[in-house]
Picture (tube, rainbow over the protein chains, first blue to last red):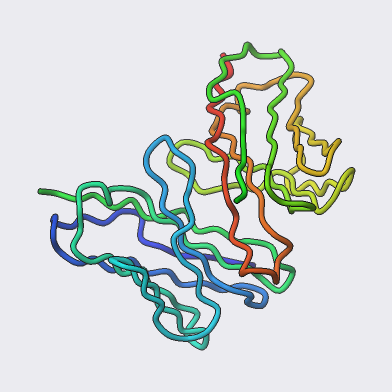
Length: 109
Length: 115
């Protein structure tokens, strides 16, 4: 079967750095997406990786290793507004998105 | 630029009543359209997706149905709601996969409570 694993919950301190990991086992690979979802709101697109390596977008970076079936989202200079769930999703060989259950990130002052 | 509209934002319906949620996309043609459900504290469950007018693929057998009467309109319906239909319903669109990396863009969602 197809599977995406993420930690259920993480806690970090304002101003610090946090890394949210995602491992996947899918039928083929056509890209990996990270989304942010604040409580009670819809997910919003953060980043996309299809080749190995690091993609940087301001305070957020996303890394991909296709050979290891592994990605991480790195958040720097954490702010209270970064408290949210972070969803990892992989597009498989049929171009269907397989979603992880999400990681709830709690930021403490 | 593209926008997606979904309504209503919240809905409280009694068991056995019908349901109609509507979603429209502006600023693009022939998008892929999706209906997802998210139970409290859970991941996203794909319910239906559509690659064109009248073309609907169902991912989960249930008492829900979807229709795409126009290119940029997607409707989620039920004839008789169950308690288990409660949840957060999300409509989304994307370009055809393979174009512009094709992330999904979500509407604001509908929080449905069946009582």
